[in-house]
Amino acid sequence: QVQLVESGGGLVQPGGSLRLSCAASGSIFSIYTMGWYRQAPGKQRELVATITSGRRTNYADSVKGRFTISRDNAKNTVYLHMNSLKPEDTAVYLCGTTILGDDYWGQGTQVTVSS
Image (tube, rainbow, N blue to C red; front, side, top):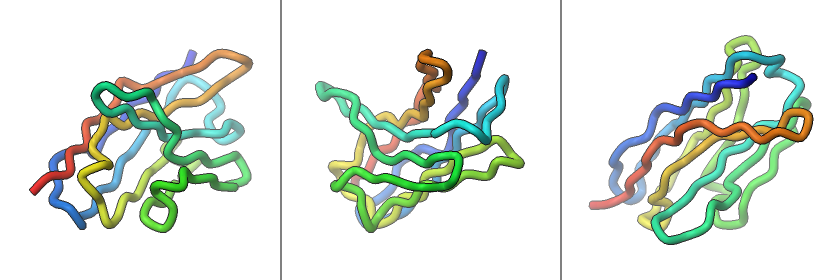
């Protein structure tokens, strides 16, 4: 069993920055690929970024150059550093992982980009 808890969301002005955190417990965190996803109202959930156990990263084209995913295995935590935020980045952000074929998700944290 894996528990994922996100934090760090909030209201930010366009051009601002936020750092999201996802704390994991209940399994061997360091060996699994972790991902950040987002879901805006009326839209499907979309992949934002992933990071492998070897810290190889992958990003959606819409966030490349603005967002950075990182992980601290000692703290069982994955981060999403978001810069140059745009109104279209407004969504619920969730972290997730797949372990032995089972998908695990956190409850999500709201990010709202608005002036």
